[in-house]
Image (cartoon, rainbow, N blue to C red; front, side, top):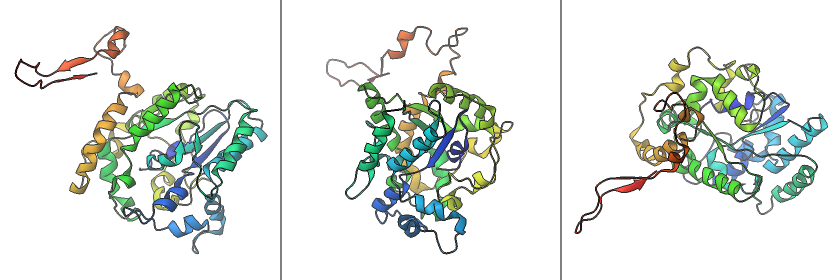
Length: 338
């Protein structure tokens, strides 16, 4: 929602990398604009694939490429890596937002087909290309404290999304649905792996260790160059960048010394009353997903010196009853929890 996820599109992975910035955005806006208060100041230009009249001509390519479906852009990215000789170790990074998830088939890892669209044709071309190369799909869920997200929702970006607080616009609760779909696909024998979950606060607090752990989980090589990048626009930025990415454009890397004091990790924020219901919906999903992060497991201080979260691994699946057992004539007031 803020800038922290956009910095991930600028990271090198120790191999040749191509980043795609929200390739489902245009289709989502095409289908959702005008519903539930959804709109953007650049929607006509984005849907038409043409730059605004006041846009620098050098940026015209950003608007034009958005007319391509996700499957075409993935095909072109993989083909580019193959042409460069990156038949082993090349990486295509797709940054998405949860509200686009209904457009993506997590069982096949392709954009869903639509009437009159090119997704089906480009999916077939991808399958032909992938047949000659070992292409592995991995999903990473970047989570963030709902209060942190929502407290910034009506901030600088408020004029871009019209301060719209509809759940379809904010999209936090979709994370649980995505996790379930990816996990289900990984259990069904497809080439999908269990998702990796990282917390944006961990990235802000300790970017080096968090990125090292992320690369290890994905089978990618970590390099120190992941901690720095050139300020200003990058070719991978979507055409909406000047409305959303100002903070990233002004930065040149992770703050390695002052993570604890960074505004992204401050816990005390104010939230408009209109967003309280969204916080109540989102918090349970965030609390669960946070238990899947590496930082959560590193907090194993109860069983030294092993450093394991559970001294006996079998305890990870223990269920406990919390509450008052039922009497003969009274209803039980407790429940079983993991």
